[in-house]
Length: 141
Figure 1 (cartoon, rainbow, N blue to C red):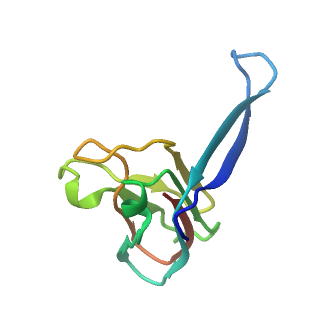
Figure 2 (cartoon, one colour; figure 1 turned 90 degrees about the horizontal axis):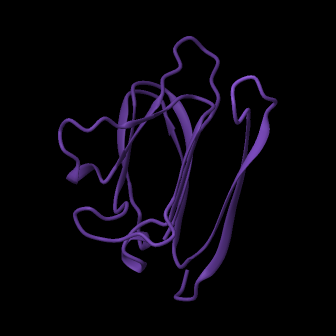
């Protein structure tokens, strides 16, 4: 992408009652940052699979991912399986549980100033599926 920063923003409204019994109101989340590198793609699994997503220059440009969005295509079949997402998989303890994203769902992580090192930001990403599914991913650094 080059070395100049590109601005981006994420806007999300979650509509829910602030207190039980009250009407839903928007709870806005607004995230503004910039990125210098990006990697994105679409993966289609036909069977049980584990894949490490190559972050390319994302983890070298700024030290770690600033924004991650993973979507899983909807699947109404009874055989539909969730996607299991692991952040920094080589450094995770054996007892760490991956993050589950069911078909039709998404996972979004925003960290405008990630740090590096053992307790730092996302440097690597892997996904696993027990069966067929289709997913998209975007990672900004």
